[in-house]
Every structure is written in structure tokens, then in C-alpha cells.
Length: 140
Image (tube, rainbow, N blue to C red; front, side):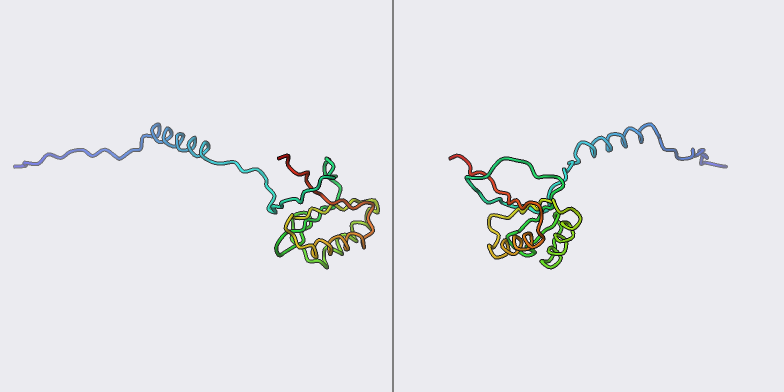
């Protein structure tokens, strides 16, 4: 006598339609919740104020040197450099193009001595023009 019944077992299966729906919802959630970053400068400077500052744009061909308020003080194209390397790069830029413009972006709180070292290095390179960036004071 046999009291148990033998049940036929079906092979387990995955319902693909439901899986696709869930993955699509997760994908949409990730796309919506992701923040898109803009390319920002890694170097944040507070520009000094000057009543004599003139509006204008930085020449894209100009060599831009930033002077930060803390070490490393010197940045060439937003890459930290030593003073020796800065002098060599400025000299090489003026040898390539004698009419090149050197633009100095000092931080408001940068040490005056460090700014003067950059200004001396720029003058020693003998470029076509040296510009120092500043902002107009805000109206109060």
C-alpha cells in the first residue's frame, strides 16, 4: 500500500518580464539621483579688489600663473609648481612666443613676498605683456 502521492516538481523559472521592469526602475532612479558635476577649478582664489580694475576676459593664449594663500603657492595652468620650474616654464613660453601675455591671478590673502617672486619671474622672462587680475569692489 502506498499512502504518499508523488508530485511532479516543475523546474524553477525566473519571470524575465518582471526582472526587466525592476531593472528599468532602478536604472531610472540612478539616472535621476546622480548629480552631474561641472568641471570646476581645483584652485579657489579670492581675488583682490581694485577700484581701477577694468572688465575684460583672460586671453586663452595667455600663460596664467596663480598665487595661492598657502603652500604650494605657485600654480601654472592649475598645476602646482615650484618657483624654479615656474621660471623655466615662463622663459620657455616667451622663447616660443615673444609676444605672449603672462596673467597673474593672486589670492587676496597670498603673501606679498610670494606674489613679488612670481612678478619678478614674469619680468625676467621678458614677455610681451604682464597682467594682474583683480575684481572691482562690490557696491555697498
